Amino acid sequence: DEEDDKREEIRADAERPFPVDRALLKETIRQHMHSPVVRMQFLSSGTFHKAFLAALEDGRQVVARIARRFMPRLKTESEVATINYLRLHTPIPVPIIYHWDSNPYNRLGHEYIIMSKAPGIPLRAVWNRMRDEEQHALLRNLARLVVDLSTHRFSHVGSLYQKPREKVAPVSSSATAGQFFIGPIVSWPFFGDGRGELESSTEIDRGPWPTEEAYLAACARREIDAVKREGAGKERGHRPHLPPRDRLTRHGSSGVGGVDDDELSTSSSSSSSSSEDDETFYRDYRANLRSSLLVAQHATRLRAVEEDMKRFRSVMERELKGVERELAAVLSGTGLGGDGSFVLHAHDLSLANIFVDEDDPSRITCIIDWESSAIRPLWHAAHLPSFLLPPPPHAHNTAAHASSSHGPPPSTPSSNNTLPGKLWLAAERAGDTARDLHRFVEWDGWEEGLLETVVGHD
Image (cartoon, rainbow, N blue to C red; front, side, top):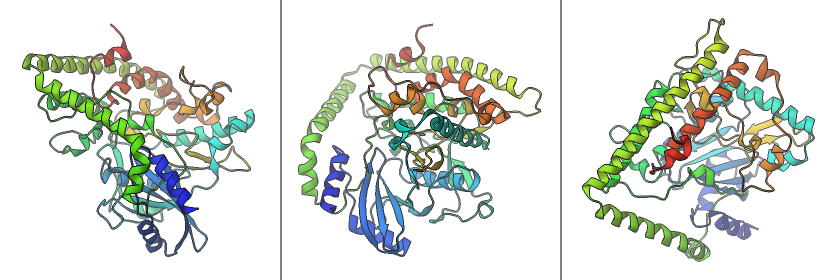
């Protein structure tokens, strides 16, 4: 029932209503897929987008991803380019993009992507029921894909884009030679809490960067400049919290289209009012605090962030020298070098985003959700998927907890017996501390004392 589906969408939106006109969405899909929509189902509502599944009259099924107003244009364009690159140049199975529009002022009123439905079923639906040998086979297949991706090297840290900005997917790799390029990074710390309104050319450096040193320097400068703007009343205060992906609301499908504003407000007002009041109170508190700060107090805060960033870069430099030694040892005698090359980071290999064959769950049929992907140093990108890591202390009967009971992932030929596999393993092992340190600049705003929780006392 469509009305029940709309109510489910509203519940998933919770305190952040994101109405989408379903009639306009159906017409948009019909226009570009050349077949009417006979049924539409809400799938999910997340931090950056919501998704709908549309069944067409000709029997096809497509997914429409509708973007929220974060990282305007760049997020959609980079996601499209990343998926197209993976489909054309790697063995990773990804959706086919049929049409996209990064103009938020189009007829629908939102940026969107229309893509094929992922074949198979989400891994989370079967992971806990899989036999050990099936899980090991799946992990070997996943390792092959991840290691292969690490062999695709890029010259800068940033995000992937495509030119010319065609609205449909290219049909062959030969037709796309030279079309992909590296542009500004699509990453929450560079856009969150109003930073998306800053001009890249003058107010914030979003890259791309030719070296990891240049990237880390830009991260440090970003936080120092934010404290300066806050002292001048140009940066709004915020409560310290993790990047939005860590608090993403996952549901089935999303879309609030065709619902009156009154219905939206009555359904969500009770859940959102306290949150909005808290946020208003906190912003007022920070505004009053700023207005009462003496120049000397702000100077103290500025010195603190500058000292933290100096210390962060010093510790990172020391750690990265160790990473370089480890990788150099692997490359020794091969005649190959690894300097100045970066890899595409598959940052969200979750049980929800990996699709598998229902009859043979060790076979990966599709990997979805490549939004906010970035090109990073190998030490950053080489890490285990989150569902293979031990659960946090407060976690209980979660899929991650169930997966951890099976022990570490098995050794795989792709991980151990090839040079790319050996490099990946060396970067994963040597880069562990560097990845922990990097989380310090992945928060959406520097806070006093935060660095101590990451690096401790010297």
